[in-house]
Structure formats: C-alpha cells, structure tokens
Image (cartoon, rainbow, N blue to C red; front, side, top):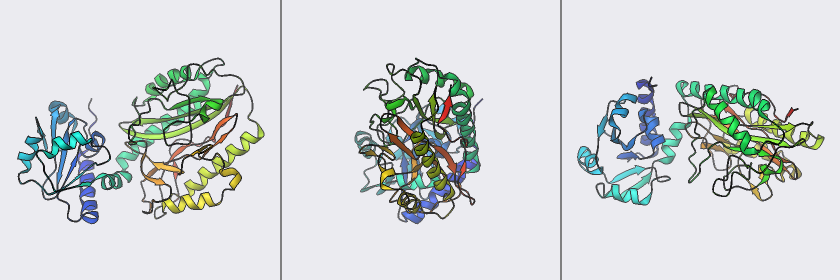
Length: 397
C-alpha cells in the first residue's frame, strides 16, 4: 500500500518556501529543483524529473520516468510528463532571467543541458532557502523521526549487545545488525547531503579502529571494508575481551532519519580513565540539549559549551589528533547531515520543531573513540531526546 504525504503537508511546505523566497530573495522569478530529496519533500514522490516552482503560478513536477508511479504516490496537483527540458520551457512560456537552483548538487553538464532551453542571465543558489524550510519539522515529519528513534534505541540499546561474540569481525557485526535493523522497520538506506558521501551501514569499530582517519567530517573513524569502501567495518579486526566497541549509524523511516552512537566494553568493565572521559562527553551532550530552545543561536550554544572545556580535554575532542570536527551537532531529517549546525557561523535562532543529532566524542590513544550521540527535537523546555537515554559505555559480558 502506497504511503502518501498528505496534500495539506505538501501545501504547507510550498507555502513556507514561497514566503522564505519572498523575504530572502524578493526579486526571485522561478526555482528549479533537480535533487530527488528536495523533489520528494515538495511532491511526496521521487522520480527522474524536475520540479518547477514559478513565483507567480502553481508549481509543476515534470517527470521523465515514471509518470505512473509519480501519480500513484503523489497528491501534488501539477504533475506532467516530459521527454526533455524543451517540454518544460514550452510549458513555462517566457524564459525567466533569474533562476534559483541547487548549486551544491547540480553537475555542470546537467546545468548546461538545462540552460540550452533556459538561457537565464543569472543562476542563484536555492540551497540555503530550501534548507531553512526543511529545518523546521512538522508534526507529520516528527512522527516519522520519532518512530526511527524508537527503532534506533531498541536496536542499539537492547539487541546489539546480544550480537557481540568474541572473535567476530567488525564486518560480521555489521552484517548481523543490518537485517535486525530492517526487520525492526529501518528503511535500509541512509542519505547524506555532503558531496560524494555515502554511508551504507555507518561505522562498526573495535578498539583503536574507531580512531583511524576517514574523509567523512565527523569525530569517529574506522578502517572500513577496504580503501574502496572505507565504511561499515573490517573483516580483519576481530573482537577480543576488553575491546571498546563503537557503533554509529543512522536509522530511517519513510525517508526521515535519526542518528545515534552507542559504545560498549566487551568482556570487561571500562577503565577509570575511559569512564571519566566518556561521562564528560555525556555531560556535554546533556548541556547542549538543555540549550536547544527556540531563540537560542547555534553558534552561541557551540561557543558557550566549548569555552567551558579545559585545554587538556580539548585534545582529541571531536576527533583524534589533528582530525577534529568543528561542531557539536547537526540538523537531521530527510538527510542525516542537514542545516543548521551547532557550530560557528550559524547565527539564525533555533525554532521549535528543529531536530539535531548531538555528538560529543573524544579519542583515547590505544583505546578508541568514546562519547555519545543522540537525536533531539527543539522544544520550549529544551531538547527532547528521541533515541533513548542510555549513557553508553555498556559492559557486555
């Protein structure tokens, strides 16, 4: 049975986007969305096509393939077939001089093919405006994120400990977690906006593996399968008693994600130093969560928390060695890495309904990456956790 996004939801999203464009780019003429995630957000379906949002008329989703599926899945009134961008140009009529597009993701060759029929004098970014609208989640969206969070909590806090076995590899653990996660309701994929970033099953690391550098901008690391697939986990690294186990992946329901990291200590109690560092990371998470209220400024939240940390603790905080990430949390929704970010430079106040993954972590030489990550929704009382309240560093015998 097809799960359709309600028409009222689509109408609200489009209305808020138009209001945002009127405020931020008062002379805008038309926005053209090529990205399938953004097309899904505004239409409720994800096809090979282009979504046209003119300023002075209704939006139209032009679909190359597949029209039958698009009309079955979407309640958007304006869905029309296209064979090429010529059809879109003919439908629009007088070509606009200013076009907003997703400059972060549209390849140059694709844009050149489009501009053959839309020779606009100005191409401007639509990305920040779409991101700002998507950042505030509706009750419809929050319901899906909360469902993802419940699955996430159950799998990481209750089921993963039962899967750990001495001698298994990181890849073995990943291969056991994936079917369990899907059986519980995970959508099977995690989507990211970062350029050339894919993450099949996140990171499954034993011990010092979680300190190994990756190109992904996050505090954790991992050997991965091999250089061609630097994620999931290694077939060679085996679990031994006393190992720190670091598991970090996203969970999704109907497109919407939560992000969570859990740590475990296999076959032994955590050492005092490891426990102390981990507990400080959890305290940082809780401090950030308390500040996730409407009107708070992400950059100020970041600076306030960072200023309280000692120079000693800041070494290997949010990464290991020189590979430290400069944030404490990130927006999350249809993609795992959304706007805004709890970091310097993000100065627009928070709004109720925004959702963040907060992930303070610290590397310990010879041990691995300790710390935590959970997903929170902004409320008047502070961030409400959607992914469970277990502090992590769970002892598994």
